[in-house]
Image (cartoon, rainbow, N blue to C red):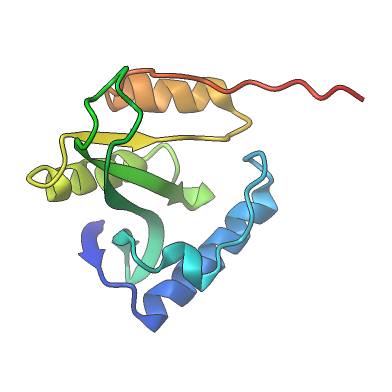
Length: 148
């Protein structure tokens, strides 16, 4: 497996859009929809490849904190992961961890924190992955209950 950072060229954007279409079809995340070009442009993109095929991706962008003082002072640089996806056949093989750690090392000199949100329906597995496997710290949760 090769992990690398790449630019948002036409081929990369088309690949990510195709993968996001597959992800949306899985119906594994509340409210997830297929990406558009504008969702990807302006982000740093990291790819996991095997035998010339993309098997996972992570993208996000550098920002500065504002009104997040319970965790970091205003104006603190952070990298926010917008998406981390691994194709189903490659899950539980370390691809997601490898992407995360590669991105973490790539932005370490520019950011003091990595943030992400998740809307997965399999919250137990995702909390295990992010908290126990990657060593992230829980900050907040948004819960909902439909009243109909």
